[in-house]
Length: 342
View 1 (cartoon, rainbow, N blue to C red):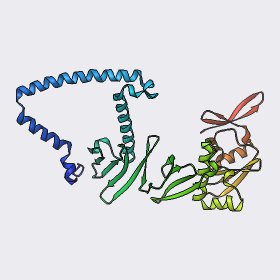
View 2 (view 1 turned 180 degrees about the vertical axis):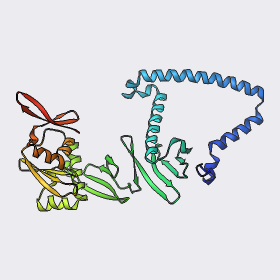
View 3 (view 1 turned 180 degrees about the horizontal axis):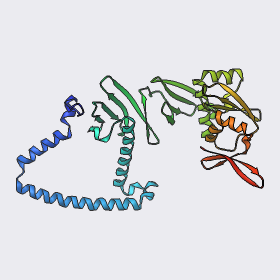
View 4 (view 1 turned 120 degrees about the vertical axis):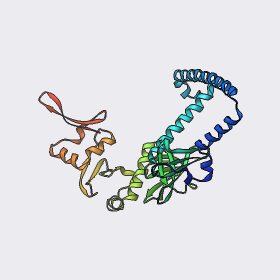
């Protein structure tokens, strides 16, 4: 009994709309008003309709498979039915991802309406997902034995992210980045980074007037990330901007284990240990010829020390798909002596 869902704990309007209740009412009406002869006739008609629907569905699937690329290119208007089906499929796919984050399953769904989904788990947790005007999940109410929690959900590239409730009314611009603890809104002249710390939103406003004529997305996002990192790490902010007088536009990258910034025509790399203490720094004429993800390997404390101990040069590292490697000339052959997977 303790593991079963108690439908009597739900509000009256949801109990009355329970699929089992509706099914019982329908069965009662049919048994009283329909004779056995008419039942037989209805069975025959239902069988014919099912056969027709089956053949039509097979035809639709075949047509959809043959012309998927063509329709995805913007020609759904030639077959509106397929467009509706695909949209519904994508909505269901997004919902399944959201369910996984909320630790609920499709089998826990007890009510599905135009305005919300309602779930009740075997442990008694109730989750209500409200929809916006377009039918997308927007707010979440979670009730367990101890408390009721309100959350909001944002979809970015079809991936759901759940946040504490916050006021989005005065935020301008488009969302260009979402992560588990932050959302970036970018307008023409200003960006607002909503940072969630201790379940509370913090709004970081950044002037973007200098980027009005810039078309570089990478340059923009790097500027926003550097600004955010300096805001969150006061000690790093003091080290770079106060002590070393480094301008934010001269900072190439800030990560948890290193910082790279321009120094005249060269680059200076500051290396930090796990406690964020500065343990070394390097002056380079040019950065290693690998992608930025590879920098996260080369500039960790252990890898850096291994490179220095073996006398390797950072200039000689090369990218090989998802690996970086270091080769040396040994006799007449070039031999790979170090290889790391990114």
